[in-house]
Amino acid sequence: MSRTGTCLLVLVLIGFSLKAQTNKPATIPHLEKHGTATQLIVDGKPMLMLAGETGNSSASDLKYLDEIWPKIEKMNLNSLLVPVYWELIEPGEGKFDFTLVDGAINGARKHNIKLVFLWFGTWKNSMSCYAPFWVKINQEKFPRARDAQGRAQEILTPFNNENLNADKKVFSELMKHIRMVDADYHTVVMVQVENEIGMIPDSRDHSKEADRAFNANVSAELLQYLEKNKESLTPELRKAWGDRGFKTSGTWEEIFDKGPLTDELFMAWYFAKYTNAVAEAGKKEYTLPMYVNAALIRPGYKPGQYPSAGPLPHLFDVWKAAAPAIDFLSPDLYFKNFAEWVTKYDRPGNPLFVPEASNAQSMANAFYAIGPLNAMGYSPFSIESLEHPENNQVTKAYDVLKQLTPLILANQGKGTMTGALLDSANQKAELKLGDYVFTVSHEYSWPYATRADGETPRFGCMIIMVSPNEYYIAGRGVIVTFQTVAGDGSIAGIGTMDEGRFVDGKWAPGLRMNGDQSHQGRHLNLNGNTFSIQKVQLYRYK
Ligand code: DGJ
Image 1 (tube, rainbow, N blue to C red):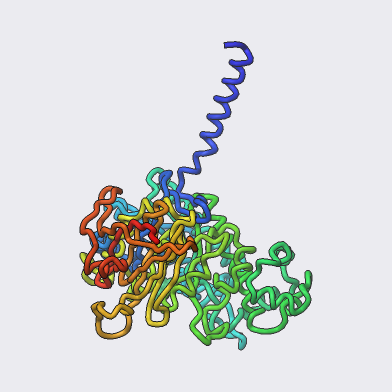
Image 2: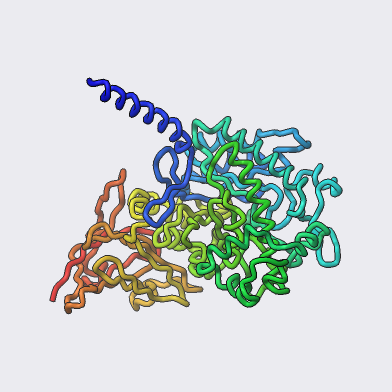
């Protein structure tokens, strides 16, 4: 080899070894773009989280937690959201005890389950109930938020550095510990920072420190963000700012006017700054993806009546501006208008994850979030309280989603998936995908369907295109008919239709669905009794 050739080779090898070193952090669970979607990457592969969240107290006793694992496995979960409690990991100031954390990690490993830790630190559902006793009794050092009458609340104020430093310290110790025990295993894949942050019972904190910040100028950092993102701001924020002439300096009330929305914007900025500082301190020790969750707003509630200033849709810009160390904002979905709320969190720059959903509501919601909205996971709350883990609706839904996981992950963010959620208010959806329009109707709209008594159930499906004429349709309780989009008078026909399962990632067709099962070739029907998959091959005729 010539001298130049040898030099080049040496340079390439140096470059390669440096790259290998700088690439090392990529082996930590992290987020990666996949088309328009963002996926969680664990051990170099995308992971779809078929998750559940335990009840709040369930991880405070390892005997209790140990009894949960078999149930979790039976329900086809691959991940569990588990609280970590400040009061129990730092029982005395500076004295750390990670027994519960280690117990959760060991239990998860034994059962091949990944963990998302929920940091119940300064705030849990607005309150500071998980602050250790030594924090609660030292109000001089760790001051509280106050209502408009000056009454102290069981809420640590975000306007105080002692509060922040105490949380940063314990959270960074937690992340350091996770790194020490888990960096080679990746059992813990994400962390939620705090839980359902929000101000209540007033729209803002009225402590002395809060008043001082409220009467000071709005941070230039926020105003610069608003200017830079003026065209894409949430309508509420843009209006509040625009109504007073898009001012670029002044106090909160000078810029946004007096009122509850301004109180909320102000609190959101300081909650988000505080949470960002906690997340940053933790990420310095171990850079797992970190997110926050929001308690949503009940109809008609005003700021102060609901946990205000949390990571809510109308406050997105403030949270994004203040908290770059938080990878995404996510909704806790207990309301019936699931589709409406979940869509508000499916935004450019905000990967979707549903960390809490009502375990009583239909698992069709999971299909909707994960398919058309590309969510990286779904998690019913208080998962261990569900009866009949061998065959309840979570078990059945996750059985189907587990089979479909490779296909879903390959198609997320590529524009090759769609889907619908149907109930009594929304009985039909028309969805265009590839060369066809799919009309998806609630099964009950078909006169021959078997109906259960009571409220019309929520049904739904996801549709995945694998080639221009081939589609998998999965879910429950839908009737699907097909039209072409060609505009040449051609009619869509059902070539073949099979129900089946994916076995080791390969489609294994079962029954050929024809005759009564397809209404003599007129439609596809996913039965309302359970979750299932069918593959349909379409063609055109004139
Ligand atoms: C939402 C909270 O985030 C959970 O910790 C729990 O309190 C549930 N609400 C209870 O419904």
